[in-house]
Length: 251
Image 1 (cartoon, helix red, strand yellow):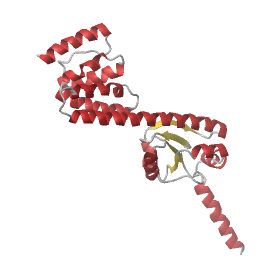
Image 2 (cartoon, one colour):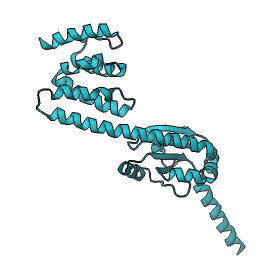
Image 3 (tube, one colour):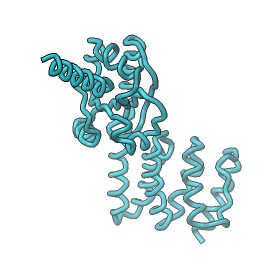
């Protein structure tokens, strides 16, 4: 009887050790969690952990069981990823230490991260700020997708000024900080450059340097070294250069 009891105790202790880094109520299915978050337009909190990680166990047993933390987390999708079981996911998110918490937008883009054990009050502050930022990013991404859909519709249109209107709609997207949005916008710029390079000239005089750079790079890729334009130059110089390009395109 004593032997059986010892075996049971050993099994329980082993189970606690293995699960110590994964709090109760957390999903461990990363792809499914991303899918649910995308459908519900929720940010995703990803908890990178490991069964051997002492600070992870403290986070799971102390911080993540705090009632305020539990209430806050309930408003977002949350998934725990064991870095030993899923090294591919850890590599994707450049995880160097555990515990690491990463807040993602609904588009699987990282918004914020924090590493190491944190008491409930400190973690709550990070969690709240990250959640707000992630929601803002999600809204920006939704608006960007709407604009891109409008651009695609214009590019499919046979209207005389459709290409020019499409270029104008890409101004703000090229000025975004979100790399995925900028990438999608520049892909459309290349299409416009193939059809009508002159439609991109207004972007060369935008007040935002990031926008000027994207439009200039696209035109340089299309025209080659004959395209001589410095997006860092002052407004008067840019205006003169653009006028010269206008004359070139209309010949």
